[in-house]
Image (tube, rainbow, N blue to C red; front, side):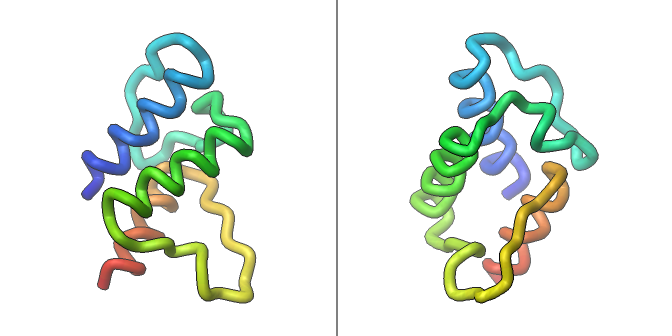
Length: 80
């Protein structure tokens, strides 16, 4: 799952910046990837289509992952 999330993140980050996003680790800050709010929304839609889950839906709590690891953990919990 890390790979599919990482690949989707890399694709959106590269589309947003027009250049290679470089390595992405668990500690990579999502704000450092070059994604704006539209890019992040596109990433979440792509992941929902790939993984069949929207970890942001159905919760009254506002969740905003700060790192790639936070994003992976969020999807891991939603897929359990």
